[in-house]
Amino acid sequence: MDLLPSPHQSQSQDYPQVFRQLQQHLDQLPIGFPATTSGIELRILTRLFTPLEAQISLSLNLLPSSPKQVWHRIQKQKELQTDELNLQMIGDILSTLAKKGAIMMGWRKSIPVYSNAMLAIGMFEFQGDFMTKEFAGDVLQYMDEGFRDEFFQQSPLQVRPIPTKGVLTPEFPIARYDDIREIINHVTGPISAVNCVCKCSQDLLGNPCKVTNKRLWCLTLSYDPKYDPNTADFFHKERKILSKAETFDLLTAAEKEGLVLQPSNSQKPIFVCLCCGDCCGVLSEAKKLPKPAQFFQSNYFISYSATECISCFRCVSRCQMDAITKNGTQGVNGRNGVTIDYDRCIGCGLCVTTCKSQALQLIRKAIQNSPPKDTTRLYIKILEGKMGRFKAYRMLFQLLFGVAPH
Image 1 (spheres, rainbow, N blue to C red):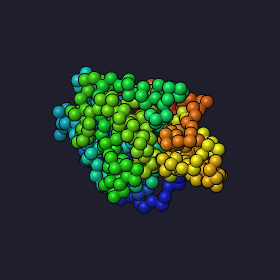
Image 2: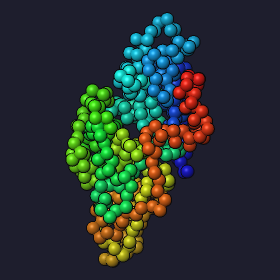
Image 3: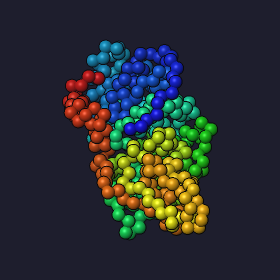
Image 4: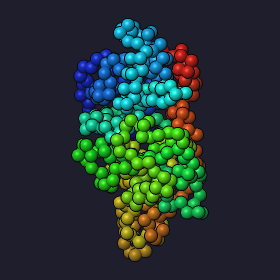
């Protein structure tokens, strides 16, 4: 796989040792948290954790744990003066960390459970409507210095492009997990539209999106009819709970604006990002790589007929991956046609929806990639690719039964 070389990096300033320990701890997650020479990853952590919070987070891991389980682990830590802490304080600190988007939070039989969060998809996205210019800038720098390589070298990616709704004719061959209509129709809980954290981050950095002026694009999907986004979602001040009809209207609007559909990479996705190549942390960073298509598990590609091309070139501006360029090959009207760079095409189909001459067609690949059944299996698969199946399952077994080092 072709990744970019790291740029020149400056020496790291001094931070309390606990932040280096937390960085090394988080680096063991499916998408790691690699060290850099500049230490930018430590500055990111100091924006989310106090030293005490960082120390407590060392007692979390990939699997959800109750405050009582975390408290038992903390009592074994020599670094903490546990006589100054108690179970209630640990629960309060974990709740605070979850509300800051520093860790994951869920529920187990009405008891809150917590786990470490990856930077992406995780801590970055959890900043939501509370994103700051400083945090956004640090993450962008970290992308250049090390995190881009970590994110793209782990397989499969956490998101995957699927065909846009406008290409889904009755005769179009598509599996349920690639069909956005089927994905939405199988959601049994609330669907919410929230602000795109990538676009909002770029706004803060003075680089507003060149593709769309709207921000309320990202969809969160729940399969629990009792789930209430207004009370359970800490991260978004602005959200709109959508009916399925309103969701399909939003998807139609996204296609018109030229946004790529990227659900989370499972057969039961928990979100759908509507992305552009200008702001999206995945697409914009992938575009910097020489052959970005190799990192995406897309089941489609574009075919092009030069004889049908009328040289309108709408497809050139529609493509979010710069996979379509003008060339010197003449079409039927005597003007130039286009060239498809298949190392950059991710099979989203946006170009097809505005090709009036049907010179562009979305074609199903002979070998299909079936996504993992759910998010848990996705991260297990990433761990298998990262450390091998035996080591991955051994680590999960140790964490599950409490025999792994913390």
